[in-house]
Every structure is written in structure tokens, then in C-alpha cells.
Image (tube, rainbow, N blue to C red; front, side):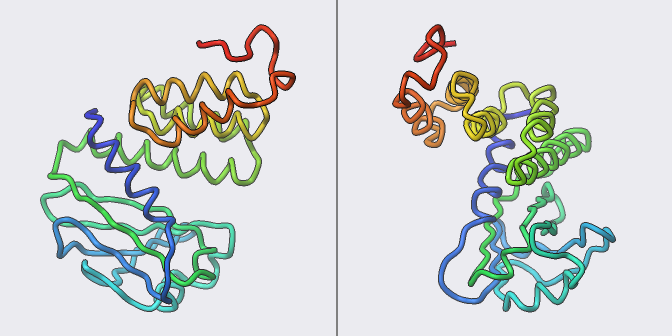
Length: 216
């Protein structure tokens, strides 16, 4: 799989969780005129809410998703345009309590079905890993990330998230190793650069003497 396609997934993930002023649900795509759907994770039912560029009240999205999707759970936004790869974005239901949810989706020209399925599988594992990490189910989160790396061993975002999971467990040498792998595959990954500096700045007494500051 081409790394540029994986990069587009990461962009969507980061922007899907951003917020700013206003009580709006905003979806933009490049190119425009893509169909936007919301998918209920419990029923699998998909309902169209508009066409990009889309800007509607957040309350409309909540009503469409349904009351059974509660805080701490996720629903899925699907962006589709004929001739382009569909994009799926998992959005936490807690976003209903914020002022705005903004999604920007760079659509990629259509590729073969096998690659589409592979990308969808990677994206699903990534969101599950994120959800499990937030719930402090670290071993299960790592298992999901291992599944991604078995498919795409050079996927920097998976290595970076693995570093975050280790860091939350105070396993600093393992975290450093994972972030260094992320940086190797994406030398401009700002998160990895910052976290490597942070880990190297930890109190040496908190790291095994044989591994403190050691490059893997």
C-alpha cells in the first residue's frame, strides 16, 4: 500500500477530533459534492445527512445517530463520491457536548477493491486501539496496533500510537523504541519528535540503567 494513502487517513483522524467556536457539524471534502452519511455502530444503519461542503446544526446529527449511542461510544461518518475511495471517520458521541465538530476529507481517486478493503481494515483497528487506550485497556490496544503493523509494518501512525500506549504505562524504553520507529518511517512526524525529546528528558532513575537513553 502506498504511504500517501495512509497519510490521508491520519489527516482525517486528527481533524475529525478538532473543535472551534460555533454549534455546527462541518464536513468538507476535496473534491466537493461528496455524499455524507452517519452510521449507527449498534444497528449498522447508514443515513445520509447531506453533501459537501456541509454545515448543519450538531443537534441534527445527534438526532440522526439516535439516543442509544451514548457518551464514550463512537458513531461513524462516511464520505462517499463516485470514482473516489470512501472515507470513514469514527467520531466520539461525547462530541455532542462540544460546540463544533469539523471533518476535512481529502478524497483519493479510486483504487482496486483489495486496497480499499485493506485501508478500511487498518482504519478500523486504529480507531479501536484509540478507544481501548482511552479506556486504559492497554494490552488490548496494543493487540489492535499489532494487527495494523502486521499488515503495514511501515505505518508511522501505528508506531506512534504504540509509543503513546507504552508511555501511559510508564514503559519508557519501549515507548522510545516505538516513537523512533514512527520517526524513521515519517521523519517529519511532530508528535514523535516531541515525545522522543520528552522521554529522553525523563528522570533517569525511572528508566532501567541498561536502557536509559539507549537507541534501539
